[in-house]
Length: 226
Image (cartoon, rainbow, N blue to C red):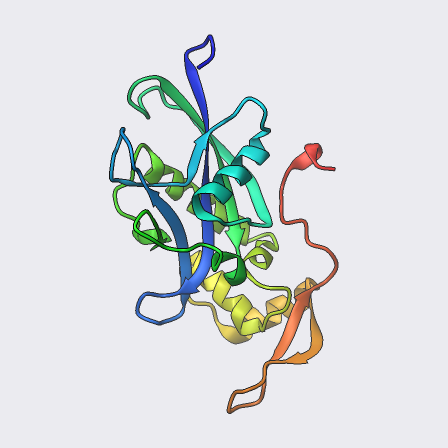
């Protein structure tokens, strides 16, 4: 604790697209960790930990994710700072919150257990501290950002079908999209290009695989990048 009497911590909201619990369309999931000490012993919480003096904020976020969930996302962006005086009992704690978007391969790095588990993002239980509020804010930011950026790329592999891309948008926005209109919008956007690959093994005409054109800057670090 510094002279100001404030502790600094790092927390991360991880979003991944996984099948719905009933086996239906893909939906957004979040991994949570169970508190193994007071305060809030036994409650679920976002993965995180204290900010160590020798670590940058991004390094601390990546280190805490690796140590608590074994996930190493390629998209890791600072979201917001949460520091209400009464958000934690005892000494005041200010949390710098990051959000991470992972595709299915990265999500598989997380091994569920007694103290680590995936939850549907819109159906999390009562969490420790103000972590329900943090998740609500992260979902709001994600859904707003989805409308104007290529953020869906972080939830997909390098190649994908237009159906898979539409399912990402539907899962994040929480509403169905007309397939024909979505295809027209994507094809006219100039963001994606068809590859010479198709998905094989199905009964019907194999769907074409697409990829994003050029490099995609998945982070949003503003003038501090580079």
